[in-house]
Image (cartoon, rainbow, N blue to C red; front, top):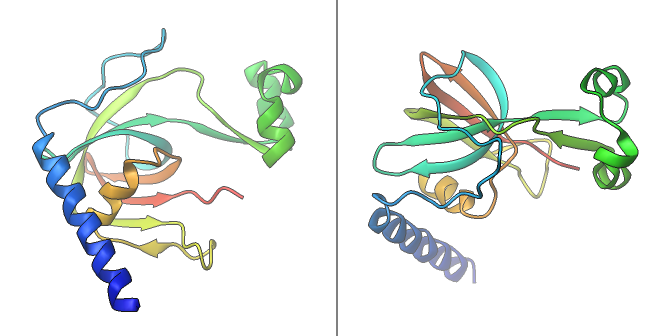
Amino acid sequence: MKLLKKTSMAILVMLTVIVLSACAEKETPKEATPKESTPKESMSAGEKLVNIMNYELSTKLLTLDEVEWIDESDTDRIKELGLDVEKDLPTSFAVNGFAIYNENMEEVSIKLADDAELFLVNQENPLEPRAVDEKEFITYLLGVKGPYNVTVKDDEVVRVEEKYMP
């Protein structure tokens, strides 16, 4: 049974890689928004919370959109942004106690380092992320765009970790 599960996962990963390779020259369609802009080519060093909008397999370019995690207890930040919790973020706070806020869509394209560390939420223990290889990460990106904590160093993404959302 365990061998069947591993074989099925391997086949799924191989098929995904084949499909992504065949589509490598095509850009993944994105939803247009009034505030969308052309991707910039740089991002300051450090850790950022982002949605991953696209991954170009042939160039290893990630297209990122920086977002902000706002906890319902962040009353000063909510005031600073001029948000009305009831109107602007009602469902997020009511259900989760937090919101992922994106004031405007400003995408940045940045290379994924060849030796980047990639982590996904560990379903068995969500507080301990699970290391994955690039193929599994790419497959996962097809369905989950974010949020992720990314670490940028020397104009490359050196670490990507899916953010646990309770």
